[in-house]
Image (cartoon, rainbow, N blue to C red):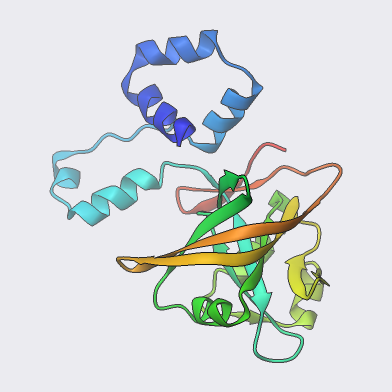
Amino acid sequence: MVFANCAFLWRSKPIFKGILLRHHNHNVVKGLYWFSTSTVNFSDADKALPLVDQVKRSLQLVSSPVSVITCDGIEAGSVIGMTVTSAIPLSMNPPMLSFNVKLPSRFSSRLHQVKHCGVNLLAYSQMPCASLFSQPGHKAFKDEFEEIGKFTRLHNIPIISESNSSFLCQVHKVIEVADHEIWFVKILEVISKPNSQPCLLYHKRAYHQGPS
């Protein structure tokens, strides 16, 4: 949230930009990269758009890391997944994450049943995987994974191999807000690659290569 606020201030307050440049460090630079400093100028026609369209256009300027949430499908050997840009850390004591699901959702219905999931932080090379699971209600079988990568199971939780990091999670709480659910999950175990690849980002309705 701090970096998101900084990004908006960067766009609107040039003097604040100078302060950031003088006091930057690696973490700040990385954070500001994730939350893009692109600018948008609204015309009178833009301002006449419905509020929801104005919000969507503004949020398209924000670069977000791409994750895929995975859990067991109904069919034997299948994995159901969902591509999200909303997976964020929530707490370190205990370690928890949160992510959002738009309703109605087959993925949500299944996750309510199995109550365990993998949160996979994708590398840029895993763009095909992100595209596969961005299809609503998609169930991936093993032969499909062989084309885009591989998956494995730890403690009966499916995760996507070669992800920069995968979190084995247990559902803690779900809250319904408007047309979304907010899922809170406890991290049970972390699987990380020793040498991470550049992460996969989503920005202006397209995938991009982020920092490693």
